[in-house]
Amino acid sequence: MKKTNENRKGFHVPEDYFESLDTQLMTRLKENSKNGLKVPEGYFEGFEVKPERSGTKVKKLFWMAAAASVLLFFGIKYMNTNQSSLDWDDLEQAEISYWIESDLAELNAYDIAEAYPDVELNAPNISNEDLNAYLNEIELDQILYEN
Amino acid sequence: MIDLEEKELIGMLRNPLQREEGFRILVNVYKKRLYWHIRTLVLIHDDADDVLQNTFIKIFRSIDKFRGDSALYTWMFRIGTNESLSFLKSRAKKMNLSFEDVQQERVNNLKSDPYFDGDELELSLQEAIVRLPEKQQMVFRMKYFQEMKYEEMSEILGTSVGSLKASYHHAKKKIESRILKNAEG
Image (tube, rainbow over all chains, first blue to last red; front, side, top):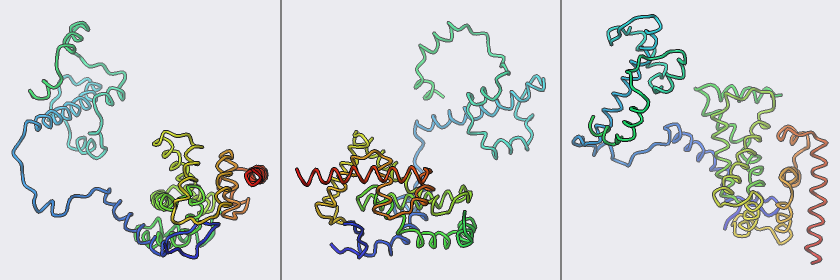
C-alpha cells in the first residue's frame, strides 16, 4: 500500500489524497446542488404515459383537500369581515397569488385552525356520540377509493 | 477576529460569481489541518475522509451564518469537531454501543486500517486515550497529535486556557501511568 510522507505518529493518508480532495468535493457540491436526485441513464428517453390507475383517485382526493383548505383559509378571513356567503369569484387575484407565493398551500386545516383560534365555523349540528359512531364505522380506505 | 485575507475569502464565498473559486481556495488552505484534526478524533482514514467532506459541505452551505466574531479557521474547526463527535455518536447508536465502547471499537479497527502503521506503543497510547473522560481526550489529542496552541484550543472548544492546561496535565498523568502499568504487567 503506497502512502504519502504525511505521517503523524503512525497515521498516513493514501497517495495523492489531498491533491484529489478538491475535485471530489467540487463533484459532491455539484451533485448536491441538484438535490442529489438522479434518474437512471436514458430514463426520460424511454418515458411513456401509463394508463390511469385506481391510485389516481387518491390524487383527486388530495386536490379536493387542497381546494378545501384554500376555501377554509379565505372563508375564515371573509367571515371576520361579516360577509355571509363565499365562492371562488369573491377571491381577488392578488390574494390567490399571495397564497401561492407565501407557500400557504403547505398549510393544512389544522395549521389554519391554530392560526385563527378565535374563529368558530358553523359546523352542522352533529352530536359527539353520532360523530364517534361514524368514525368508528367508516373505513378510511373506503373514502379514498370512492372519491 | 478575522484578518483581511479571510475577509476577502469570505466575500468570495458569499458572492455567487466567485463562490466556486473561493471554495477551492478555502479547501486548499485548510484541508490538511482540518483532516488531521478530524482523523485524530475518528482515527480511521475512510471515516475521516467522509467526515472531512461533510464538514466542508456544511461550511460551504453555512458561510452566510458566519458572523466573523472569531477567526474563520476557529469556526471551521468547531464544525469539524461537531461533525466528528456526531459521527462517533451516530455510530454508537447504530451499533447499540456506548460512546466509550465505540471509541474502543475504533482502536480495535485501527489495527486493520491500511493507513495506520503505528507500533505497539502507539496502539497502547490510543488504548489509554479512549479510557479518559471525553474532554480530556479531546484536549490531549489536540495538543499531542496536532500540536495546537492552548489559545487556539480555547477558542475552538470555548474553554479557558487554564482549564485546558489542567485537563492536559491530568490526561498526560493518567496515560503515562496506564502505559507504565501495561509495560510492567
